[in-house]
Image (tube, rainbow, N blue to C red; front, side):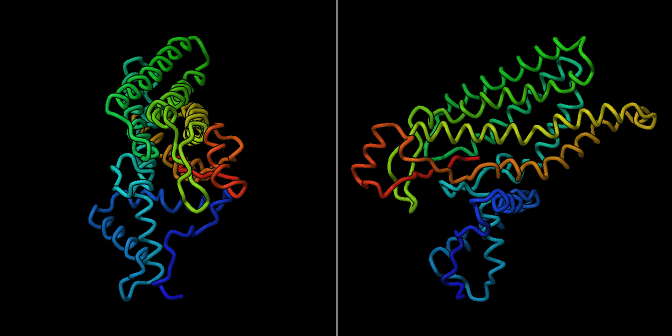
Length: 320
């Protein structure tokens, strides 16, 4: 195949299956790409755009095109093509998430520590949610501030309240408080950060990418799937790891190295996240679909009047 006709946007793996999406997200959430300089990422973007224009530089191999697309997908927003901030990229979820989650699991006993690490986590989440929003629906600085304050307050109220409530509960229950706080905050942070999509609707297209209108119901579906994915991403590490640590801490060798408990938890969270970040992102297709019959009546009628029964499904970017 001549590389000048190479379709660089064609999925490398079947996106309609979980395994296909898992391979795709293992590829683009590779944390090694997060340390590459902007100049290297810009080179990858230029190569991708050249390929799209049908002018692949002489000597370029197919593998180089695949790698350029990997860097492009990991660092540039799918809606705008702008380079995303490094902390908000999914490729930074493993190093960023393992450090913050490990500290939340280690420092859960005192209220000041709970407050500090939940605040750090929600600041991180807010940036990730903003970075991976559907960029076709702009959000104002005021709305970002309200979303951030609301989500952080929810996380702190849940964490501090449960922390106090579980003082007399079994030790393992107290270890699960950080997960309860993270899960509840995700249910607030993501919808609040993407409230414009819920209020004004999200752009939907036909199978060929032709814009059909905006749908609030599509926005709700996409955001709900993102909330489920984020909670799933955190769940194994924050639920299973406390059980492992509680059992390990009974051994004398662990009691002699209490100063290493934090680093150990950080590394173990990292082991969970290396798999869970791509797995959680793969739960639902990023290019989400919805039946025309389930859209708002006015949008449904508009589509039917223009296209009849030829358009049965609409498509939209649900974000990550």
